[in-house]
Structures are given as structure tokens and as C-alpha cells.
Image 1 (cartoon, chains in turn blue, red):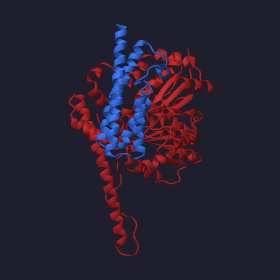
Image 2 (image 1 turned 30 degrees about the vertical axis):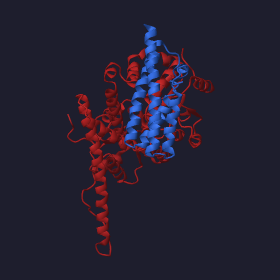
Image 3 (image 1 turned 45 degrees about the horizontal axis):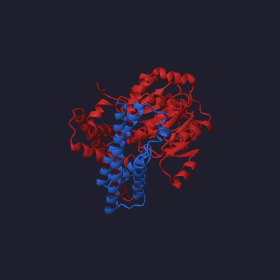
Image 4 (image 1 turned 120 degrees about the vertical axis):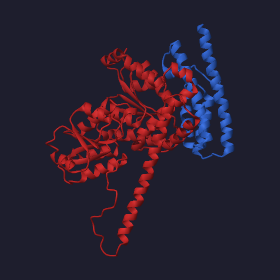
Length: 120
Length: 396
């Protein structure tokens, strides 16, 4: 499952419809921005920043239950810890990350759309 | 209007008679200083944009520390001028002052009651001012001492050594100036909505350099400005339309709190327990706020170590949720020093909240005095358990 919102209230308490939609939009925006930052950190070989970004996304992806993205970020963090920073390894990781991140973005966008439709 | 001769030092002094000798020494020095006993003057001086020393000489060391951190809370990060916080203390308070210094609660201290070393306060002020980019030392090497024997060798080595150190210092200062100029330029472009890719590239490079430093107080202000600006810039570029319509969550929350004083009063009356969340990630802080407030508890947020220290000195909390990786320090250092700070929160329970699952980090947290080690993201069940364990009270 790309994302799982069944435990959202465990992280945010009871949510009204508007609050839930607002929160999902925040997740979406934050994920898009974090994705861009990670790509940029890889481009600049800034591994300290890369580690900080993947570390942050590793935790925040669990708010919306994006388990594959969480695991991918954990792997990214470990690549820095174990100094596996060869171009091939990083590019392969980046391809995986892009796939998981886009999947989560699409899933979030879909849920937001569904919420809008249900309300209409 | 800019001041013709801005002070190097603001001395907050309640009883000039107690610090008569210190005042006399300052008068004889080349330092430009201002003496006040007004709290509002102190707050204004903290945000006047002029680098300076703040020296507090109240009847006790603890009252000086408390007063400073109360004032600090009144000044937002982006308005805070670069400064060093010094205290004048009595001989019997020296141990406590040293503890404060080690914990970075103060930048330095002067044992002034009594004042044994007459020129020590001036030497200390010069050293602290230099860290702030103000150099009052003489430009040339004037040696009052005669170097004995062996001709000019030792004297030449000394002069060369001093010159070498001066050169290195100049390089560092010019680097700081470059940072400031680049930020100011991008800031101006942002205001005109004329941001170039060059601006972004330059800011990104600066940001990387700044993020490589762990805890350098002299760079914190610059770091804050860069992070703040870069956040605003990237958000604007990523989502220009949404950004105009919706402020970022952090701003939204602050505005809501200001706009809703009645709600705050209800919380106070009900005496709900308060939780301090020390967390630099906006999203994690937003989620934490939602969860904590939904459980009827009070919430405060510190996005940096410095802000956390200011809050811990002045506001009582019932639980501290502490992240480890902070932009200006390590959360475990704060947890470690908290009991030695002898402040209202020295006994408050610290629960580390982090995404780091490494065993070594858990051991470090235990050593630092943390009572719990929670893995992010924060969950309602976990928080409920903590609430019942420590009898935290919710308001309804």
C-alpha cells in the first residue's frame, strides 16, 4: 500500500473534514518540497544535508503511512552512515526514491480529490 | 536614525554603588557603554541591530540570568541583534557561573564583587566584542615588554605570529560579510519578486556551509536569517499561488495564538499541564501541536536550542519532548545540562523524540538524563501513557 491514512488520528487527534483536508495538503506540499531538496542535495554531493533531509522525511512519511517511502529514506540515511556514496549506488537509490515519492504524491493528491468530490 | 556612537556594551545595573569599581574601570577604558536599569531599554537594545555586549549586574546571578531570558522571549529570532550575554557575579557565585558558562546559558562572567583583577573585565569585553566582529585592539603590535637577549629573533617571531593571526581573522570576517551581503541582496530581490537562479544557487551554497557548523553562537543569527529566507524563497517558488493564499503553518499558528487571547486564558485558568516540544521540523511541530492540544494539554514550541533555553528559564513545563538534531545544537546537550541550570525546569521530565533508532544514541540519551526515548512520529497512545505516568492534567 502506497499510503495508509487509517492511523492519521493517532498522530493528529480527532480531525474535522476541513482539518483533514488541510493536513493532507500540507503533507503533499511538504513532500514535493522535500523531494526537490533531496534531488538538489544529491546533485551538489552535499551528503550532510542529504542525510538530514532523508532523516526528516523518514519520520514524516509515517504520518500518512507511506511505508515504502519511509523504508527508502531509511536506506538513504544508511548510505551516508556507511559511506556508500558511489555514483551508481546513489543514482539507483534516487530512482527508487523518485518512484516511491511520486507514488505517495499521486496517492495523496487522489485522496484530496476524493475528499473534495465527496463533499460536493 | 542611526546612532553616532553606538555602545559596545549595555550594562544593566540595579545598584551602581555595589559595582562602583567596575563602573570606574569601564569609564577609564576605551569602551563605549551605556548604563540602564530599565527592562524595556534592555529589550530595545536586544533588537536595535547593533552588535554589542549585554552585561547584567543584578543583586544575584540567578536573577540576572532570569531577567535576560525573560527579555529574550520578547524578541523574535529575526529581530535579535548579535550579542554576547555576560553577567557580573559575586565570588561565592563563581561555581554556578561556571556551570552556566559550560551549559552556554551565559557567554561569560566577571567576578566583580569584589573585583580582584582590575583589567580583567575590559580584556573579557574585548575578547567577546571581537567574536562579534568589533575589534578594539590596537592595529600595530606595540610591545611594552623588552624581549631579552638573542637579538631581534624572538621579537620578529612574535610580530609575524600576531600578523598571521590577524590575517586569518580578517579572512573569516570578510567571509561573514560576504554571507551578509548575499542574503541582503536576495532579500531585496525577493521583495521585488525578481529572484534569479543565481540568487538561489548562492543561497543554497551558503546554507550548506552554515549547516556544517554544529553550535557556533556567532553564526546563529546569520543562520536563522538564511534558513528563514530560504524557506520563504523556496515555498514561493514551489507554490506561488498557494503561498499567497495560505501562510506557512508556523506563521498561521502564531497568528492564531495572538488572535485568540481568550482561549489562552481558559487554558491558564484550567491549569492544563504544558508540554514543550523542541523540534526544528515544521511539519513534526505542527502535528505535535495538533495532537497535544487535542488532548487538552498546553503546547509550546522551540525550533532551536537557543529558543528552548530561553523558554526553559522562564516558563514551567510538565514534560519536554526533545529532538536530537537541532539547527544550532544537540538536544541531548540541553537535556544533560538542564539539571545543572538550577532553573524552574531543572526537574522536568525529558523524553527524547527522534527518528534515530541507533542503540548508541539511546545510551547517550539515558546518560544525558532522558527518562524516555520515543521514536517519531509521536503517537496518541504513547503520549497518553506519558500523561498518566506523570499525572499531566488536561483542561476540558
